[in-house]
Length: 413
Image (cartoon, rainbow, N blue to C red; front, top):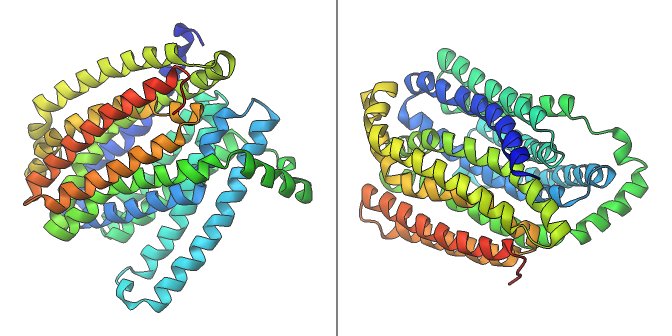
């Protein structure tokens, strides 16, 4: 892919992501006034469990979609991944329901939240997989509309339930229904022919071969990404248990608002980078040029974002969400170095999947999880814990960048 084509494709994805991210960001102005910080903190904890479980359900096989060749091989890979998701989700649902029935200590997790959790886990896994397929196919316009539909659904229902009965369950149901809308939009805009699953006997045989071919993803990428997702959600669990739901709510809003534009730009670049890098790696044996070009773009944008947050974060949070949320702006400043390096490193980390470096990625993720736990266990207070976590995370991302650059040159560890 030429530089011009790279930027044109990125611009298409970025426009859709901008709209998709603007919807929940604008919705947050209303949601912050409808829901108390404690309710938002409890929902954020619930959402963290959903996102972690969704990673487990996919087996991380959706990351293999871009590696497959265009056409029938990739369509079958999507079907195989969806079949895997449904099978693993069924097992997970039985296990969770069994634990809920026999373990009284989790009965405070209401039946409504439990049902929403199980449904949201399955839908999130399907939505992520279908969006990965659209990106791998280069169908960036459809991908943008899918994300916009999902954002509208999530935000709209959460605002509606906030007017009627503001609660943690309302936020959870809003998220679940919004993801369902995103899945419906994905199926309608990028349909998968039913014949891909037929005949069933032949499909099962090909499915087993698919699992064997891509076994490195569930063996190494799955635990790595599961650990990464857990490390990302771990701060909320520690903050909730050590410092209370209000502190968790302030942290969650800061991370949500700060992560919005970071995720917006980073995901747009990733959707284009992973296709161009995978193609270059198949044809040339490396993707160094694509890596360096993408790194320069991300570094410049990250520096601009950091400058803006340092200057306006505290006052912006107070004016936009109310004085009760001013501390969230302060927390955003503490977190900014971590988010900037995540913005640069995360899209480029796809090189690990392309070059077969999942083992190294897994080791790095284990180090990240250990650092996260240590920061909050050893931290004497809320401020010290969050600052130590942000600094440690930033340092880990510097190592991540060095490793991913090595793999972009075609080297294997």
